[in-house]
Length: 501
Image (cartoon, rainbow, N blue to C red):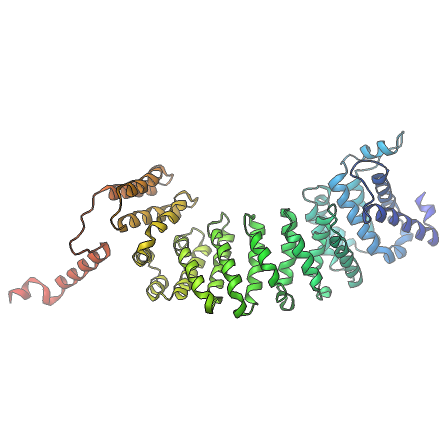
């Protein structure tokens, strides 16, 4: 039937436009319901008809002229079908077309087949094969992976003529501006991929406003897609300078985010901060520093590393009146950074050492800088406890979560630090030492034998009554005195024969 109808160009044009009108009326104008009725069967039937027509060799020229419109209509039909229509096409078909007529494939499968036929008819067979090799057509069939298939489809669209990309880009922008809840994820997935199209570099502020609006979405998929687009824009100097207004939203996104979203938000915020004027960066940097600190202990080593790197950058950027406030925040992060120099992920440990050096510079603590540069781990711990005698109890509280860390290296450091801090307490109350021993006791059953032994030894030391030296010497002073005594004893002028002469 279709061969006869499309053999004449004037008939072909009318048929294509009619089918396109059916799809656009139901999808772009949202004149449909999410239940099987004639408003869903018409696009379903139109999609099936398009699939058959597009396989006719006589329609290539006319299809090329209507390609962007047909592409956009099938794109939205695929997404609507994947999200709302049943996989079994007979459900829709029987409700709307009773009788013995055979039902076609499922609505989403029918739309996917029509999209493949459209690309082949327009001369884009290579795109069809590329998407096939990467499993893109199968991704499009399932609602939970549909947006990934759309992104793959969009990345191939970037190789099309700029006129086609530009038309589809602006159609998607319009659709997103209307706030279409049904199609917003599909539209955004395609939209952000086109942002990196070389010929579409002139992106205006309206696009930023649109991305900011959807960044506030509660959906994780939508947030991830928006951040992907912002990553692309933040790499362009002319755009990143216009993105300062997004920083509060980016900081909000960091709270309770998954690894993917946290990583993208950290990349974008870093790019924006680096392009801000130093005189204006202070207040926003202080807020960002506050949001970054909880991420030092994230389960993902990538998030830990990047958040520590961002904190270092923020410390180094702050100047003037904001510096004192930043120093207060830096003091709070010293112990977490100290713990993470022992991180089992080497890149995290390296980032922590570098951040500690920057922290020492920010605080203007020359001794801490020297100890950090020479990586004298436990002398750093002793320095922190000696420098902040009034903060020892705070340090104890900060150490507690690391006793339950998944990394054995951090649990071990936490035990050692608690023991050192407990001995540093000035006039410790018996109940405080007992509390420290109580929190250490579960570590006596740690899966690591070395930690079990260390926890037992630390508890014994803390429970042993201490005798205060009359001179008030502490452990470090005693150690220095013994070292000097040993050196004098070994010196030629200080041995027994010299005294005898």
